[in-house]
Length: 362
Image (tube, rainbow, N blue to C red):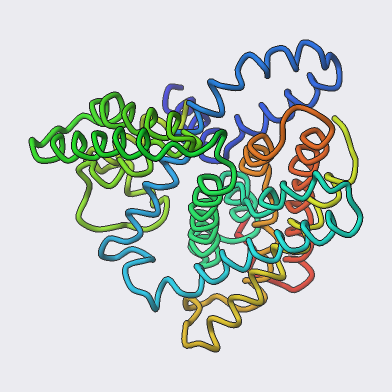
């Protein structure tokens, strides 16, 4: 009985079903009693956006960092070129489509949300990819690396274009230097627990960004590489990582489990559902012309399906929307666009069936 319960729990967590259930519950709540929903959302805004998202981006940074280790997908420029080019294309074209629509059709204040359709929701995209492809298909790690690179570049956009206040270089430099020195000191003395890295250098980094005018959700990104880690990478989200006992993997094991429609809605949906697939396909093709190669077994048709899957912006797009706009119609419209990017899931399944990609065994 305990083993069966453990299997069910693992299935729920591995397939992001809690996230899906929470999303559905939030949508129902917001439409049944919007006042109580808004009251709770307003209360939790700082805790979620400025604290909780710190750990979300830290886990993404962890995977990107490990991918640069021997055996990782980013260990050499040739291996990294194609998915990284796809990630760039999957950001550039959606941003251009959104911005062009906002400039041409207005209102002008929506233009500042151009980064919202650049995002890819890693959890939901991975869930859809597993429905379409067998576990060993190269499209899955290609998508994961693309999505992680996408969100990593999103961190840079967030820091440069969506800082909550004017940049204060002295506060940023002072606290960040202290954070990096403290992290280096913990590493040299062989600190095995991840908590000192989070509570010490992590807190200093958070203060550096918050007081310096940069969004504090990035606080643990510069601290992650200092945590003791395995010398090689098993692959993006590899199952074997659960058996590794280094500090960085124990950090991941601990943290990975815990409506209005308007012009902004259509701009976000157009940027994601049109810009993502086309941008990923075009830039992947350009990378191949420049000498990069796709992973063995991955066809251009698979790259297009991956592009459709990556159009699910949802959580990261929501986060970018709250950074781009204050409370009001623009925020409500673009958040609805992020939510409607779920259309990418059935669309990807339909496209995959139409072009005959590999299906997982029953």
